[in-house]
Amino acid sequence: MTKILRAVCLNSVDYRDNDRLLILLSAEQGKTVARIRSVKSPKSKLKAAAAPNCYAEYTLSEKGGYSTVTGAEVIEQFFGTWTSPDKNLAAGAVTEVLEKFTRENVPAENEFTAGLNALFKINYAEGTPYIHTLRFLIGFMPLIGLDLSDAELSRHARALFNAVSNADEDELDCLEYEVGDVVFGIAEAGRIISAFSGEKFKTLSAFASFTR
Image (tube, rainbow, N blue to C red; front, side, top):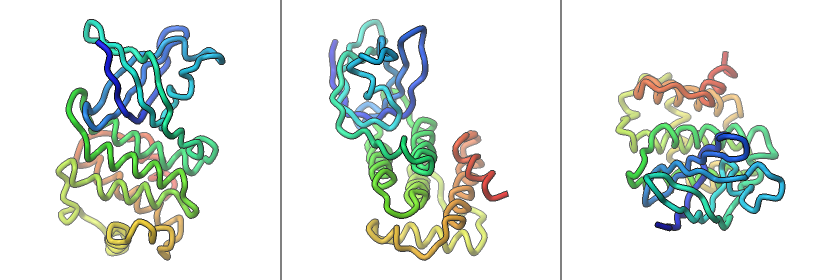
């Protein structure tokens, strides 16, 4: 059976000599694990679609409960998330959270929309991309059943969270907060999400290490 999914590649893991396993997220099907063959070759036509953060229309062949990518039309590569270390880290936090909190074959329209929007904002941000990561994390909490009003936060952190969540999206880059404040906010959001879920997050831990 063949199907087409518009999906974001959350992760790409080496598999055997020349293949990769992709973790794809779509609105309709949630998380999908799919093999993509011979993609390590420089001549592979599917190479771009096998990169994390890629948003593409993937053609999948399904057989015996396994999915294989047989074609892909890239919609947005989010190239800035690979050329800028800050944007790479900001995007990595978004995709890691999405990978942890979505499930295979469970629709994830809200999660997909929130993640795709965050990647667009991070990629094209003129100011610090971290502000869009923080906005994503704050908005993601209700999707996992986390009530931020019950969280233990310092006055400074709560004021930052309120400002970021209430600002219009075109105003985010104009908020009068230093990058260090935003990094602190992401570390706090990561602490809350980790405590709530019992999960550990590599990228969010990196933000926490910046604040020590």
